Structures are given as C-alpha cells and as structure tokens.
Image (tube, rainbow, N blue to C red; front, side, top):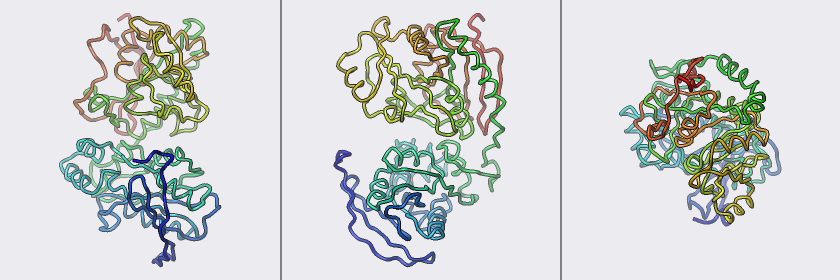
Length: 453
C-alpha cells in the first residue's frame, strides 16, 4: 500500500449522464491505494464553491442494484440524488467499499448470520472484521480534485463526518438522509442507531419488538451528577487530588469486549449521548494505553455541544503510537503519564509530535496512580473521568481512588472480557446513594462506592 503522501487519485474520464432526475456528469477515478474504481456524479457547477451538497455513498450491490429491503442503502442513494438535483448543484461520490468495507462475499455470509439472529455488528465481528471498515480518504481526494471548498454532508453517520474532517474536508453542516423503515430492515436500522451511533429518528418499528425503547430525557441522572461535580474544586483543595468518576459500559454478564484487543460497541445512541455529556462535565478523561492501542479513541465531545476534557493516558512503557487520534484533537494535547524509568528517547519522539509526557514515580516501573492524581491536582484538574480499560478500572478500584461510579448496562450476553478481575488485591465496594435510569434499551446506574462497608 502506498504511503499517505504518495496516494494519487487520477481522473480518467467523464461523461454526460441523463437521468430521471436531470442531467449529471459522471467522473471515473483510479487510484494507487486500493486500486478500485471510484465514481463521482456531479450536478451543476461545484468548483470553487462553498457549502456544496454532497453525499458520500458506499457501494451496496444488493440495495443499490437489486433494491433489497434488508438495508436502506438503495433508498438513500435515490433520495440523495433527488436532493442534489433539487438543489441544482452537488456531488454524489460512489465509493467501492461493499458491506461497510468487508466485500460482497463476506456481506452475504453476514446476511446468513443475521438470519440466525445476530445483528449487523455482531455478524461482522464473528467474521473477524470490524463493525465498520470503511475509509473515506478517497472521497476527500476526489472532493479536492473537484475543487469543492466546503460541504454540507448528506449522512446520518457521525463517524463519516469525523473521518472526512480528519482528511481535510471542511464539513459545515449535516443534512439528515433517512429512509422509511420496513419489516425487513427495522432491526438493521435499530442496530445502526444503537451500536454504530447513527443519528436516526426511528419511531415504532413495523415489526413487533424490533424498535428500541423510547429514551427518557437525560436530565434526571445527569443533573444529579453535574450538581455533584459542582463541589469538585473544593474536593481537590481538601484532598489534593481531582474528584474521580469511573464510567464504563458493560453487557449483562459484565463483558466490556468480545476478547482482549477487540473493541465492542455496547452503548445505545441515547446512553452514548449521556457519556459525551458526562465527558463535557469533567476537566479531564483518563484511559490506559491498552484502550488507545485497541480502540484508537478521540476521547472528545462530539454528540453534544460541550468542552472537550483533557485526555490523560497511563502508559508506563511509552507505547503510545505516533499515529494516535488523540494527537489530532484540535487544541487539546494528550498528557501521557509514564514511569520515571521510561525511555528518554521515546519521550522525545512523543513530545516532538505534540504529546506532553508526565513522569510519575512508582514501584517496579509502573505509574503510581495516587501520585498521578496528586500531579493532576497540581495542574488544576478538579474532576477526572476514568473510562478504561479493564486493567485501569481494576487498578483504580484496588487503590480506592474512585468517588462515584456510572455504569451503562447493555441488554446482551457476550461471554467476553469481563471488567472486574479478582486477581487484583481489591475488596470491591458496595454502592450507596443509588440512582437508576433507563435510556433506550440500556440501564444506567450511578452510585457512591462505600469503601467502609
């Protein structure tokens, strides 16, 4: 595969395409990255224009060509063309990445798994693929070739917006593109909303039991949490460390991943929105290096309007990758907490790409969490949200450094990596001052750990 700076997208041909929705120009693009033939369908003049209406559509043979009702792809394709034609100018980019990037053959295998009761996400994972393997770099290159300055994106997928922005595309607005659900795709659409966080306004499903339960307002639980965080500054002055919230999502059987190193989407769209609100309410957010290597997270606030927390990564051996998404958050430099024995040259490399390294003393080359919290307190952090992974969660519990716990419980059984590890020398606490709230199909629990009980 060519290095990023060597990727080339070459326009090979264009032709006039009259359609039932008006006349378009079809552009054919070759490239030296995936060696697939990608297309762009243009209406009107877009070169040098701002706020161009754009749809980035991934190939779906079954939906686009056969009109399959198992998905909403074909309807989205036609709705997008109608809106672009109605606007008088716009672009539809057609990327050849069938089945969210796994290809048509694997997609058919996934369909068979869905017929056995697995949803669209689990079907991909069972086939040893990510839930979504699509790449939007080609779309960004094509838009650059067309001279489009900024776009209004026809999509329900926040990940697509984020990926295009990472590739240098200025996305000024999201334009919803929702097809009507039918009895064949109702469960598929619910899975996209609940597990892939697509922004869908789904009413009652056409089949019994397929719809996610309506989400009550987030206010009740979040107001209690935000009221509690109002005293975080006083907590830091009294204790010398930030107020610490432990927050994570798990299945009914306590799993946070299908297996080590394999991320698993658990939270529904409503509880995921609550998590982003929780992030915005804290000064900083902390994860272990294992989470960074497995998930490559942004740890920012995207689903609501709010301030991004300061990301902190516990990384005793400085394994933090220089390609990490945490280095791409505008205006937020990741703090990497490492041991006093970590490699000095590796520290220089990470600081050269924008990270800040905090050396924290500890036993046997590990970061002492109490010392880390004291350092964060010195740096003015009043409240800290700890999101994972399993080793970090267990370490904070073992050290009794948690002040409140917020757990999202998804209604599924996974049989995977469980969050609590009894090999840690910890007596896990009972929780008091409990509050529960159902958000969609998820149950969110908040409580204070009772370390004396």
